[in-house]
Length: 96
Image (cartoon, rainbow, N blue to C red):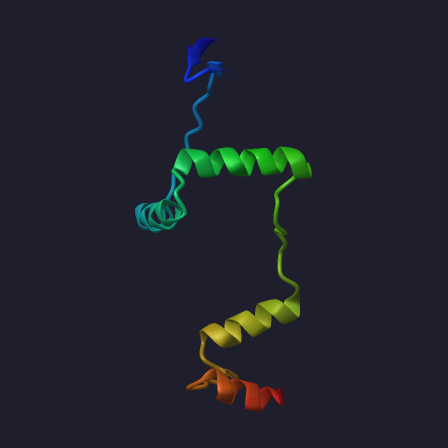
């Protein structure tokens, strides 16, 4: 502990976490985190805290069912895909 600006600061021991990530993905994520004012270490710390609080991942991780798998494959192949030039056109097609 040491005094700093009238507050007592406590040194917290840290552990190192290593992960292998594709370089392009790493760069994209670092840019996004930078715009949010976060470092990769801070983001990992937040993720770990949420895992601890939630008792698991803070988002759903599932194997898609057969319908979702077929739909995603068709979409990637450009089949049964509608394209719209504006939100107004999309909403009209949806009847909204």
